Length: 495
Picture: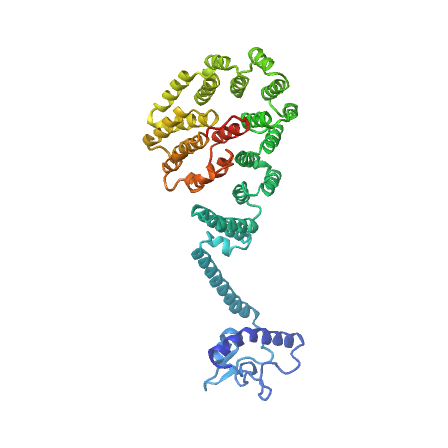
């Protein structure tokens, strides 16, 4: 092997070989023949040929990279400039040449790796490639790449690829909370037996993210209509003393109302970390569930009300409506309307009028909602349509469908939720001919439109309102509750 190519490979092995031999020669007291001198020469400086350079194509390469004692004499011949007593090893020179070569190779390799990863799409920094303590972050970078790939595939409607990419992202970095939560959200409808234990796992290993995890799980359970799971989660959250006590109190009471298990109310009320107003409300709800409707109305009329828990006001009106005391509910609303949100006041007034069959009053409320200012018209239409899901009214539904035509340009989320609520009300109300037209009011980029199933699936023989939970995404919690109430209250559907 000759030429530059041969000298290159010799420059890798020769320093180790000759430096080691010269080091041993020095350690043994330089008694034997010098290992790098030609044995037929005298060994005198400037007169002795170098045995180590015999096979090199260009001896000057050996002099630069291995041993600087090799020099040219006046005749232009390569000779050793040192006698046996002065021959020594050059480990530092070897470290400089070979260490530098390794450093350059590593630098070029790292730059190539960084460039390739950036071209592919990995959001990797130079620090993460060149700094060894940061190498553990590369698994996070790769996981993020597949997470972004999953989101892009989902946006394009390629759900299989989105699922596969998301699973790969989780396998690469199972400790990333965002990836784990996204995976749970993705499979929350299709694989509940797997997802619910996974949510439990997230609650255990990320206690500081408990509220965020519970909220996503809560929406998952609502979308599946899993009242037992919803009650268990609400009980768990109330016992943990977490935030949003009103949300979990309502979830627990709603679940118990339709699925039974009054003992869960008592169990939650016994929790030491449950706030006192919540505890008292749950105890009161327990009493209502354990008595007759007539006695329940008398309790609702006479029981003192704590005003330091805003949900207690909503609860009182909801229970009066449930047990048929709609007139008392309207009086209570009139008395406490300043302490309640405007949306709750309108929602409950609509329900009270529907239960009391006050059609003229109900029509007036609907007129006010449909005449709202353009900025709030979408929210008003959303609220009115949700009411029609629970209490169908064909005349008002026709007006809601017509109102979609003049719905002003509002934020996409408010607009899409209004259309989703009107669509749900139209399905419940049996307005088959208008469904495709209602769906057409969603923009082509609307998230809800992308997951709407064709209308035939919703209206085929044997359909149930819970089908809506699977085909409308995303769905507001309020609309979700309205559909569940329609399902579990066993009110007759319009055909």
